[in-house]
Image 1 (spheres, protein in one colour):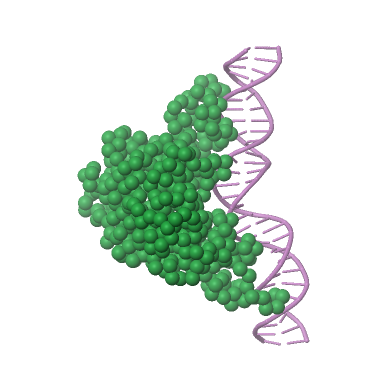
Image 2 (tube, chains in turn orange, cyan, purple, blue; image 1 turned 45 degrees about the vertical axis):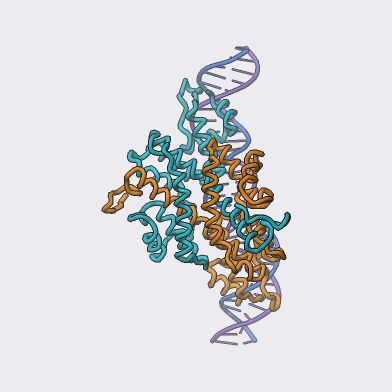
Length: 218
Length: 218
DNA sequence: AAGTTTGGGTAGTCATACTATCCAAAGTCA
DNA sequence: TGACTTTGGATAGTATGACTACCCAAACTT
C-alpha cells in the first residue's frame, strides 16, 4: 500500500500523513528504494486511532504521541496496563493553572477507594477533579460522592472485559484506551438524559420544552 | 470597584478583562465619566464563571459567549432550563467531521429514554456519542447501555437539586451549568478508579503497580 | 503640577495543527 | 525512450484561537 492509498482509505490527506510521520505518531512504512515505501493494515489502524484520539478525545498531538509510545512499549504486567491507559488519558490541565491537589481532596480519595488508590493515575485524577470542584466554589457532599462511586463502579464492571486479560498487551492497551475515549461521551450524555428524566418527574413537566404530544420544535 | 481591583480579586489580568469585555463575555461596568467605570460582585462572579468554563470545561470563548447570553435571557419555564444548560454544554465537534447521527443511534436513544427524549439536547448528544462509538469501530451492546443508563440515572437523581426548582431562573441555570462542568470530570475519574478496583479483583492484583494483594473491599 | 489609571482602540504574539511548495529520484505508461 | 506522475524528505507558510502589548487622551490622585 502506497501513501496515496493510505490517504484514500483513511480519509486523511497525504500532507497530514507526512506530518504524523514527522511527529512520530505513525511508524514509517517499509522502504522500497529511495522514493517508495509500503504501508499496511497496522498503519491504517494507527491512523484511525490517532483520528479517534484527536477528534473524539480532543487529545493534543503531543498527548497522542505519548499514547502511541505507550502502545509501542506496553507494560508487561496486567495491572500496570490500566494505569498506563489512564495515564495516557489524563485530563488536560490548563497551563498556568497548577494541577495541584489539596490535602482534603486526597483524603477523600483515600477514604473512598481501595488501599493505595490515591497513588494511582485514576486516584490522582479524582483528587484533581475534586480540587477543581472546590476551587470553583462548588461542593460535593460525602453521600453524593458515595452514590456516584457506586454508580461508576457498576459502569466499571462492564468495562473490564475478558479481552483485557487475554489479549496481548498492546492490543489490550489499545482496547482500554479506545474504549474509554469513545464511551466517556456516552456516559456524560446519559447523565444529561437522566437529568431530564428526573427533572420531568420532579417538576412535573416533559423533559424538554414541549408537551406530551411531543412536537418538539424550537 | 475599578478594573484593577477586579483584576486583583479574580487573578485575571486587565488586558484579558478588556478582551472579555470586547468579546461580550463580561458586561460593562457602570460608567462614571469618560475614563472611569465601576464593577461589582456580579462582575467578579461572571469572571469566575468564565474561567471555570474555560479552564475546567475547555469551552471555547465563542461557546462561553453563548452560555453568558443564555444566562442573560434564561428560559421562563423550569423544564426549558435544563435543556438550555445542556445546549450550552454540548460537546465540541471537530470541524470537518460531520456531527451527524446515524438512524440506528437515534433509534437506540428513542428506545432508552422517556418519550421525546431523542429530540432534546441531551438525547442528541447521546445519539452523536453512539454514532462516534460505531464510527470508531467499537460497539456497546444493549445490556451494557442499559446498565450505564441505570447508573447515570442514579447520578442524575443527586443532580437535580431543589435549588434548581426554587432559585430564580438565572441562578438555577448557572447552578446547572457550573455543577455539570465541575462534576463531569469527577464522574469520569470515578469510573477509572472503579476500573482499577474491578481489574484488581478480577485479575488478582493491586490496582496499580505496588502494594499487597488487596481488597475486594467496598 | 506631576504622575497614575482608565477606557477604547489597534496591532502583535504565541501555540497548535495542519498545508503548501519544492526538489530530485524513481516508477509508470505510451 | 520520454513525458508524466508519485514519492520521500525538507522547509516554509497558513488559519485559528486566546490572549497580550502598546498607544492615546481624558480623568483622577496626591
